[in-house]
Length: 435
Image (cartoon, rainbow, N blue to C red; front, side, top):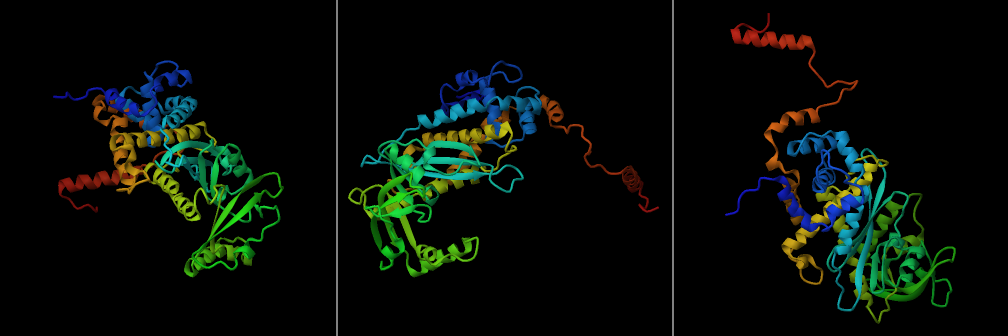
């Protein structure tokens, strides 16, 4: 018979098997844990990180929960400890990605889906941070995650690619400089073409009139053109093929309506409206290697990274930044939240099997519901709620109490309190309330 656990740290250690094995050593190496005070061990410090980043507790709630488990600590002390955790959390995040197994398709190619997502600070109306993500399209496993400020745009230059990799990205990455950087690393490309962000040329280097080349194409058919893409200044060039699929009349009308709505000034020109009725995908893979139909189908699978980002935001609130954009705690929260997400995903794959959601087979479901259930399973392990000490509640109240401030918490005026007291006394004596 298994004896019940009496130590919150023993149960929490079960989560560590889904983190790098040298997590505690790295805490000392990166100066996140220097000496034991209120926080006695690196594992306790990691629990504080998950309180704040994983479960989205406020600094004072972190302090109260830690007080219920161990000993009294203030929210100022929690903030100080968290600020020192930035390099440690980032190092663990990199190690989590490097430990992830990477499989390739039988053709020897690895399809890497690349996308980005915006993060807003509390009260902000625009983007404050941006997540840059690369995911293996076969296993749906993230292989690279970067956090940047709002001034860093979407480009393939951010990612480490290798020969055999095929970068799959949307039209936001259709810039010659980034695509050229990926090709120089030996990677191939499948990118949705933005015809107005590059200069289109034919294989001889002459300007290519795309509308004229596609004008006679029938609906719901694909036309393949050998092209050279150049940057507007001519510094960068990428050669490949454009696969152009013409939408049917209903789809084209919807796309043109969307084009008109998205046009900021006036109405779009005739060329923009014409090309809105097409799906244009650029690739460096020759048609002899992968057919145009296969390229189009692979690009449609790019939606899986969008689903993963939506899952992160919906289930884990990755976009609900808890700190000010310029605060050191913002970097800790962002990287800590990603570490929490990768730990949850690794736990899910370990318990259910890594191939449960792979795209090379008929899938039984998606990760959404499983993530939600695992989140609920992990939460009490992190908080240690079963081990909160009853005698610690008095200390918790002190930790959670409001600090002295100019604007006091609301209280009934003395006259109203006196009236309520008199009314209550009259009710007890059986007298009418009104005098």
